[in-house]
Image (cartoon, rainbow over all chains, first blue to last red; front, side, top):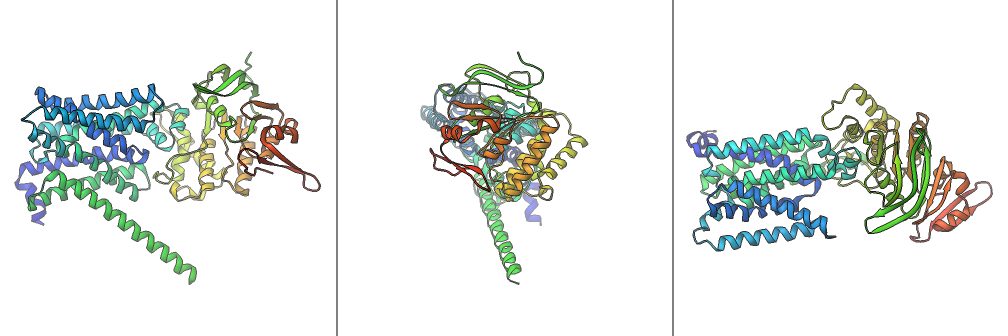
Length: 284
Length: 261
């Protein structure tokens, strides 16, 4: 068993990466559950990519990237809201437009700087092995905020997943709580970009929650499964990255995707066996 | 003047969407403890009126008072069953979780659910005949069973006003009987109701009925206004059956869809 734990015991940077990754898994597991249940994958993807220009500007100005990411997310949500409220266009169109526009803006900003290449790779794919204690502290605060909000807003969030109209009629403003949900997704994306990067954070939002949806019978259980599968992905990803010298962030997201397909296959096998048993019961 | 005994009062009401009026000149009073059935083809304005009553849509013109307040201002007193529910195939919810949601409006964001709530949830499932499905995932149920769960949710809210959009859709004969009995009990305890329905017999048995065809064709006592002539105006084609088993069959002219006997 030493080969499983030794890397984390003997390398502090790897232990820090594991802690940061588990925190990302918890926050992404919670918000990913709502993304999967409410069909918000497109806006999740758009937020994950749309924060890029904010981070790029922050890096140019020498201020923390997390502040730039927050500004980028605010512009995204504000822009989507403006288009959907001021025109008859669907939110899909608004999200797509802002998504591409913000991504293009990010690339334009990056292309103006000659010393940016290394930084932008770090932004896109994260730098989990270089994570410091301050970043972990920020991740802890964000995870507590996300978990706390989802506990306080359990009822309106459940109703939103069930039917936004039902939420509104029950006295919970569907607009307000949808906004809070988007803010939670944005927060998860913003604080996770240092760990797995803006490109890969989307995988951590979707793959573990998708697997959780296949396994759970209750929303709380789905979140728990998502957090567990995400954490397992972090563990597997870091280990393979350590032993085979792979890019850590990508190895984590790849592990999450593989785990999703393993869960899907096992559920399909289980379903086929149940069907076969029923068939045998009927014929016997 | 709105009397305390009125559940709903509408005067010269116009309903619809910001750039599209759907029905105009709607005037009616629904006394407490009474049932109003809305009848009409698809797209006639039934759901639009229900959404206006619960505050999902704003009235475009006229006056509307629901339980003494503006629409949408009394969520604790209103139960709403919409026609469509999203993602029921993926939502990891058990039947009892869905029914329990009917108590959320009463307790708001953080109010604690108590034993009384649990009793109401259990009773509501029992009344809709789904007690044995309480622990089952919603996604594993048939359409009719899911509809019973949604109806149980509405019953669990113990509301003063039930707003139900095609509540008997998807129910089998047994389910319809159970639903009708539950509605009868709700009216007996003093609740009022507005139901959009394609069930002509249900509409005829209601205290009031309104025939809609993007205008109010008729409004009054169910058995008084639901005549072959009125239905002909509303739906286009009507077949009146005489003899030992009299009844009225409606065929929607617009959609060519058979309706209720």
